[in-house]
Length: 275
Length: 323
Image 1 (spheres, rainbow over the protein chains, first blue to last red):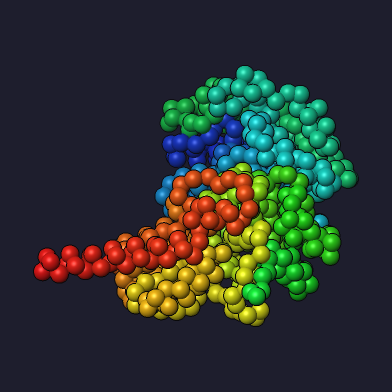
Image 2 (image 1 turned 30 degrees about the horizontal axis):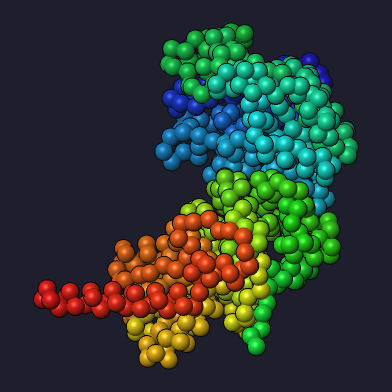
């Protein structure tokens, strides 16, 4: 991948972070930390990896993305808006009455959103269903699903993980946004899910570990996942909660809150300086 | 001798028929395929059958994903697990996005028998009825089950169909019709109307025969669609009969009786008695013993009729006195 392309993706990711915070400050509520930690991965998915047509959102051969950690909805809405699924003017309506941008992703109201998520733990089963359907129809569709690290406390994740492996669903790639923090504190304190790599391997998955903020590493992991046959791939992406805004980084208290107007101005200053 | 037919046996056969006709029909089960009769489909169409093992939440989520991509999934397990264990998955992954998933659950009610309370679903109608976008159907016999399942395959949206472990007496002809949200009115009665679903329809028909011999004018309605409820049929019964008895193999809380009570109390209040399980769990025993123990019998229906007719007559007397 040419350096200029990488730089372009970094620039898009910076814009996505600005969009996320713009949406959140207007909404006055929402999940800042987990949206920012997911921003680089979602950017690479939508602006490098996935095949889709925003003018024809139901194109049958499209790749599909499931945001299983649905509370990072602002990150998803930002890429969908920038990709052209809807006018970016909608960003200002996040979480407001009548908006197409609900608090958590809802496929019934938002173009480009594939399934309903928000109640944690349900996206992997849905992604399996999407991938199995593509296989039955012999379509080239690849399915991507992003989980939070707190989310994998949910038992359904492991039910679904066994289904993915049992049915050798190799047109599926899951990504774990491993920012290390959940609502009540660090994963290690709330409920330790380590060793993550060993767990997913033992469940029959091909596992790749990356730095989830390094564009080159994200690209190479997503490309590599496509070559893995006969088993699903899990990309464990080590990330920083609140990434890109210094005072939000690694702060558990920014899990479920929007920036204040003042915090937003400071964040914009940092992001415009390209920190 | 009354012909007996298993609603789940019919399900197994109809699935094959649907699978032949439509390549988008897929079937999922959670390790109960021989009991739910989906094993037949699995054998015939192995590539379109997915056994997710003992994981009902995953069953519902995977079904939702398949539906999202245009398939028509039939998801089966026992009623207690389909609606209880996976309730929130049905809510979030299926009903909220209005996914075209057909949940066909077998072993509904207490007639599951010997397995006892853990396996007897006496709350499933309530759990499914409360969900927006959900359609809830309890067929009264095997042939009505077949018609409902065929119709569900062509209906767009989530559907819950409750089937049973036990065989039911056949009420309808093999080619009987079924319409979602349309009650089957067997008779109109000026004294009382019995509104039932599932196994209780056949018992209501028998009770009505007895009551007619006692000189009463009895209406019988098979309310096989609990949601959307045929409220016109309920209100007509309330107007014509002035007294209603409901009967269901389910808790009296939240099921058919509650649905009927909601409609009449807001529009046409008349005396009502609900036959069902009185806020208790089931227990082990033979199906017939359990029906007797919990008062889901022809005689219980008749007693309820006498009760509501007395209420009706007391009410009329009160009205005369106050005038």
